[in-house]
Length: 112
Image (cartoon, rainbow, N blue to C red; front, side):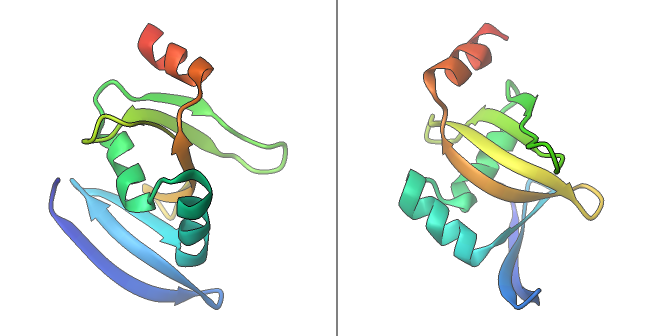
């Protein structure tokens, strides 16, 4: 794992975590992160690793009102994840959700 820095800030009365991994900035809400880990078994700290996969695949994951993106990539523990995110404040990625890739997503990753 690359050099990491973590700091916590208050944003819209919710606690956000700001993190960097190998020079890429990430941010997420602590309540959303806890809910995601409970629901999908994926912590956002691990989800960041999908973006470091040189074979990662990027897709549009937008609902109709908001531009969202998805990254399908392997973690250092070889778990293939589907990570939904938005580009936030420049090039910082705000993590929305992360889960294990479904079979169709795995096929798209493997076929690229």
